[in-house]
Amino acid sequence: MTSLKIATWNINSVRMRRLIVERLLNEEAPDLLFLQETKCQDAQFPSSDFRKLGYDHFALNGGRGGYHGVGVISRLPLVDVHSRDFCGKGGDPRYVSVAVEVGGQKLRVHNFYVPAGGDEPDPAINDKFEHKLRFLDEMKAWLPTASPDMPDIVVGDLNVAPYEQDVWSHKALLKIVSHTPIECEKLEAVREAGGWVDVMRKFVPMDDKLYSWWSYRAKDWRAADKGRRLDHIWAHPALAEKATGLRVLKDARDWDRPSDHAPVIASFKF
DNA sequence: ATGTCCCTGACCCAGGGA
Image 1 (spheres, rainbow, N blue to C red):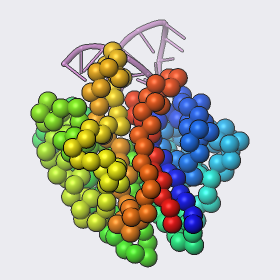
Image 2: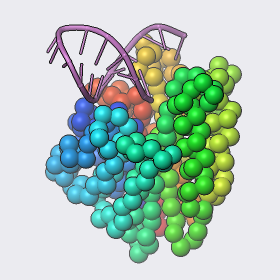
Image 3: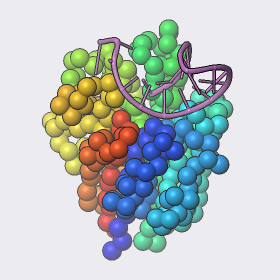
Image 4: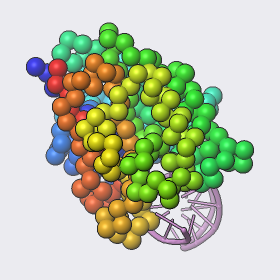
């Protein structure tokens, strides 16, 4: 029996928050941690801090730093690493994938940071929203479909809360970017096209609230609890069957100088 | 719902992005 524990976290600057990244690695000991919004050039990534904790393997796509950026911190050797540009944009680092060997099987994890999309949910007047919709279309066309010999996982900040109970108020957020019908439909189309299983919703019933993000702007985020589920873990069906646990580490939203996202952690047994 | 936080570039603040 082999187990695998993975975590995904929009960290909102890995340099600013390297201490709470260390805290997550120490307290949760995931085999792999997938980060989004690292805002950090690869050469500036604080790898040595994480090496001290036994994480020796890194896959970084930080571009020129400053904006966006994704990275993977791993205890397991990475047998393959792949970065890709989406929407024909250079210098817009939003994807990196890694492959690891688990229980004699090669397994790939795709780490995404989908564009947030700005404020106005109209692609005709908002280029950022147009970019987000195009990004989702390209994800759908490009991501591999389910195959038994290459079980894949998708993780990341997909910046869409697709279901009614993924937001604090479905009605109030229908015209708010992240929960508009067109985004929800497009994200759902990506998931269905690839035959992916929503691992978070496998563990949390559709009728229950499920959030991974709470705005910095709320006076008391926990009391207001106006959250959204922007972060996701998807797996191919055969792999989703092996999932044994799922947690949103809400407490991390209150750690010292927190990210506005909480880590999402999934465990698998093979 | 215009509030908070982090980045850059250039200066101790403004503007962009989320």
